[in-house]
Image (cartoon, rainbow, N blue to C red; front, side, top):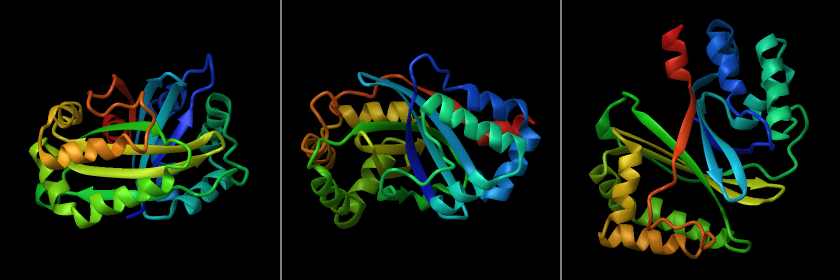
Length: 238
């Protein structure tokens, strides 16, 4: 199942919730849109940072991201056309044009198969990568989600987490990592991770210091992040 976690800057004075309002107010059209696109889950989060506000979108579907964007840009549905206008107005991104940067890269993907198929609460955040630290980040991810995957799984289970997905976004303003967490209470899970003294968690946080700038401090819990859209909630409400 293709997954993606993408970052979109919010233009000054713009309302990032406009797209969510569009979907929530027109659930049947939204359902038809995502059925055509092959999107099976879509969640979006707003995060305030020193560089401004960002929206992180987490999407699952049955098509690669490039194919989904291609279909969206050519859609004849009114709701898709309005959504494209929203993306350009609010985020300054014209999705009808070829991307200005390289495609995103999946760095880590963990799912606790023992937790079953039920979906739980989500949380997403983003962090800028220091210039020149991309290869170190790739090596770290390979070790964490590869050689030490059993330790990572134990760490996340202890904190009530059931999924973790990490994607490196290449943007015109530099590389940004997007992380999506899912579990019983991802906010509480993140707090436990920040305070954890386990060897793996301390190693994980220390490695992050060599990849992200000093203001990104995983020894502290994340700042408040707001969920602005959940496709499951929107479709159930309809």
